[in-house]
Image 1 (spheres, rainbow, N blue to C red):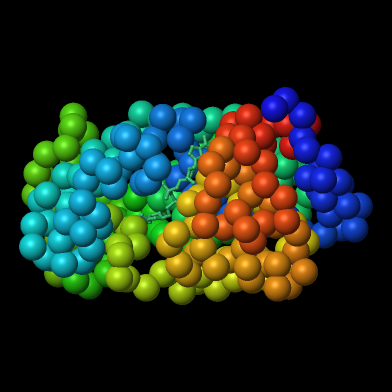
Image 2 (cartoon, rainbow, N blue to C red; image 1 turned 45 degrees about the horizontal axis):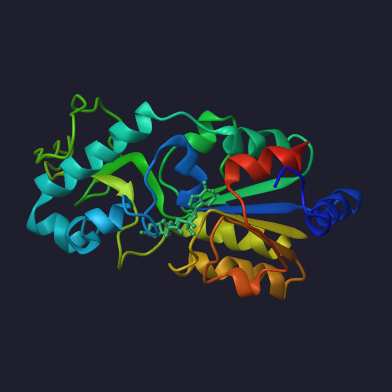
Length: 250
Ligand code: APR
């Protein structure tokens, strides 16, 4: 598919002509063409290889912080070794042409490294380290990178001595209030929402497209596979982020 479907092209043109806002909601599929594993859907996805309940919960951390920290250091290493793809770059370019709010479920920094301003990291950020107990931000040096997944004893908080955790939202934890408020505002104000690379399975983030539609937005899904959100989309474009977004911007 090397052209933008007419209905999607029309929706974007209409939004620009009317001075409307675009809200983009991205998920792990946005970073797939940068070589980062998604959580679901393929044989090498993270949750097909690792148990989220043993790695992405506060209980897992309490039980074995070195296992959890080692896994996240491995994911940080993957992100550091990855580059933003053409889809990330296209979104940064689109923001120069139309008022755009970027809401991401991703904890990587590839949108920022492509030049985007991210309005909301609704599931936090890998590199936003903080103390598990007192919450103090840790912007000190990181222990050196490791190869593969191994147990690494977490660094300690300079203020209270408890362990430093990754700044991601674990299952069962509340979303960062400011990020969530920003995401809801962006979804409620936009005329067009592009939903890119998310399976739409994890709430409340997966509820943002329905919220946008309730406020009159046109919702477009860009995803090579059908998802739980496909039925809510006004238009679906069965292709990948790095193929679709540069065409859309062009
Ligand atoms: N371009 C666009 N979409 C893609 C691509 C691609 N190149 N490759 C895969 N996809 C799609 C898949 O079809 C799937 O629908 O990306 C989606 C990835 O879904 P998930 O792996 O479930 O990722 P995501 O939706 O972001 O997960 C939501 O779950 O585990 C939690 O906190 C984690 O933020 C994450 C949340």
